[in-house]
Length: 68
Image 1 (cartoon, rainbow, N blue to C red):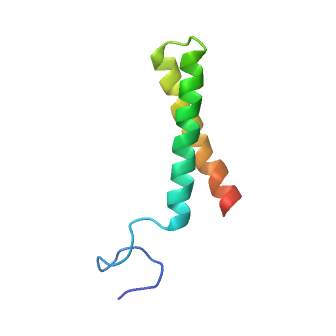
Image 2: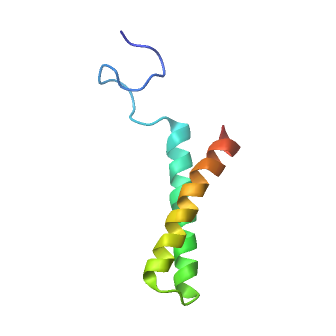
């Protein structure tokens, strides 16, 4: 039983929709940018990674609302 737009029930179709791929791509870019800026500002690398991860997590929600 295959429904259109429901993912991969029978192994057909993409793993992610185009919308989800764009949202995750933009979130990854925002997180990487925040991490690099935090590192360049002189933060230790664990703090920079945490800043980037936090930014990426918030960006998924933000871009999901903007694009959706």
